[in-house]
Image (cartoon, rainbow, N blue to C red):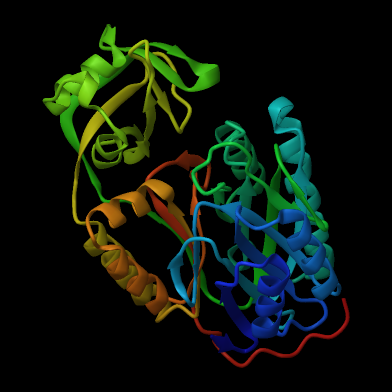
Length: 388
């Protein structure tokens, strides 16, 4: 896809150097453009990083490892996808947070403030509704909630979305790419002003039920719930599903997650695994006293179609959708045999992005959601910018 030099690309080549060259040939980036890429962790990351640095020497480049890649070739695994933001449509700045294990709110506020100042210096006429933020964060850091909350508070009304990096469901090492290198225990924030109309969005296909679960004992540090409603967590959750605890599996966790209600909106809190002691470990932060509701699933495909129909009514047909789709949604789509329908919807809406270990929207970290930023056609032909 190529609209006013807004280009997307995807490569299925398994050799890291060859894949990077393939992407570069598809994007043909001009000096000063900003490039975002999303790569399988199966690539040799050192080789991939070196080749990206060589090929994209005149560009700002950020990216991350994934649990699957979304791009013009499809809803894939073991691939490399990318998008190029040209200078005539986007002015972008980036920054990184390191050592997330010891993250302090002041670090997030400082980063957000610095990026806003740098962006304003380059585009003094920029308004809040012309600006968006896109976050890529280590998906195994367990720091998504604190980071996204801090950044959202510091950015105020600036639209903010993003996703947690993956590693093809190995759950060992996830990485973000910034300033020429892959990093773990880190997050990268892109702040950009654009002449394109855009909307940040979030959706899922679950409906809260009547059954409630109160977290009565939890290990907040490890996101582990020990007791629900005063009973062993796995036992109580299984009871509400009408099955024995020993039958619990990732398929049940994906099909029947729980939600927490925040400001009237349900956000999914996905269960990662059942532990030998009968506790449940979650993908999101959980705390004692939190009220959860078991959900029932609606139609995933119809929910996606409705989401894009709403975006079409606001923007017209998107020329780009930065897409963050939870790995558990892909698991469901694969199990139910609907993956090709999901892929068609993503392709039809010019989606580029990745399968995530978690999704961020405004100040919320969630699971089993589809979130991102959709961009419409420019209201008028953009003027070509020159200089830095």
